[in-house]
Figure 1 (spheres, rainbow, N blue to C red):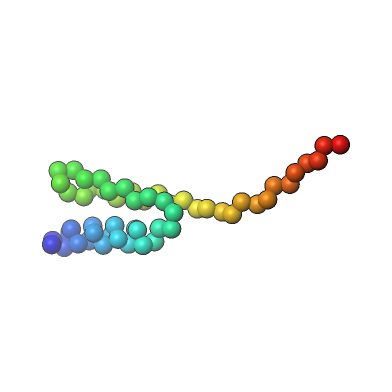
Figure 2: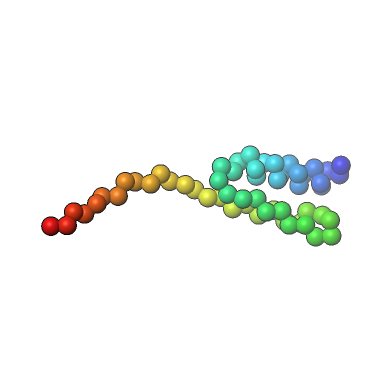
Length: 55
């Protein structure tokens, strides 16, 4: 495998390892990887909402 291709594969693997929630999109043109987009989502626990009692 070419060094350039190895670099691309390592970048994709690294992106996946660092991601807890989200997506990695790999764009390919003419059979070659041309772009890697990573979208990360942060999740926060929901707080219990206070209910307002009617009078």
